[in-house]
Image (cartoon, rainbow over all chains, first blue to last red; front, side, top):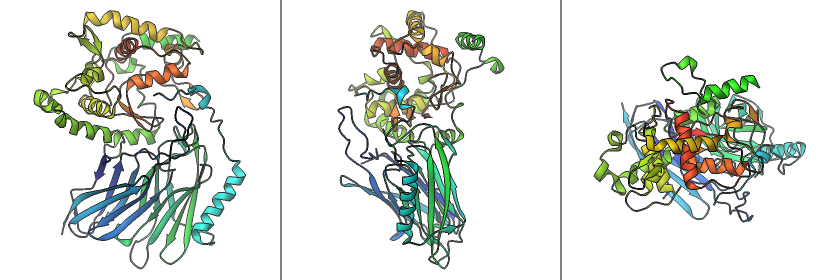
Length: 107
Length: 143
Length: 241
């Protein structure tokens, strides 16, 4: 399980725009670098990130080698109803991780 | 095990880079492949990135497209392309009206000074884009 | 040349922290670009915080909390006064070395050790570096200063030639910092990871093609660097290019 740092406001007013920031520890190895032995280090990237509000997919990112290590993704969300946000990362070498965050929306 | 590296030589950035002109054509080809052959028009796409970067390993990038983000009128997707990294794609984002604001942020790698292009697909089928030039003083991907 | 000598003398002379106008010292944070400063300032997106949060969890998992209680109280100011004399081993130790041998031994520069060092270092953020006035450290500080001023390696350069005399000038496209270790362990973009001052010093000696300094030399050098930076504020966990 990679370390993650997810920043979601604890609560928001209905209709308010909130910023969500997700950081995950991952080398994002490009496949272009060489190790001390001169051999290419194998590609190991997070390929896809998704954010669900309840069951609804609201945001998706397809990542390539040009995304920095320990990738940060930030995006916005219009707070509609209290619920659970689900964040899913998938990548090379069968990498898969899901995290949740609660969002409290006040009327 | 420390990777022994002549730190002083590496600073010259003298690595195997493609000639700039060939990459500009590849960049254009990548953008047109994304849009299905449609030339993007200039539009309200804003790329926020430092014009001068100290280290190309993690460069903060924000792309914002002015849009009401309603079901009838919103940004469906934003794709970011580069000119001189080993490959043209940086990231492709899929958005929805639920976001309320068409703004995405991440940190990217830049192998050298180059151009970045952000292309947005709007819900009416149009493509809009913006380009910026970034100066990088230390290389990232190509080591 | 004279200006460089004056700057060198200014940097080597003991600084009066009460007199900020006279203090010509600048941390790496101050000489970074605004974009990198913003990256460091935002705890929600500073990549070093992945290690800090890991350190917070390890503080409990490894049982540090049993003897030391909450780190926010017990570890406040600790990083600011390291390296310090260790009575048991009868030599100076860096903070990382001190943590390393508490409980089950952690490997040097391991993810766990870095995480704990980052978490403990955070508890001194904003506090001035306060080298202990311990006479047993004096010969080691002296040796550290001698190492700082000694030409080494195939490139035959001393730390002082770049970081005292040419700080603020450019090496390739990069600005030469004054090299005050205010933010360690820090997320160095070049490493794409968090790393220790020891790792950074190893990079420097490799960069001038010198034989690596041994562990005791590295501790003495760190002792000198912290004395040289006395009074400057800790900004762990930092970001640097």
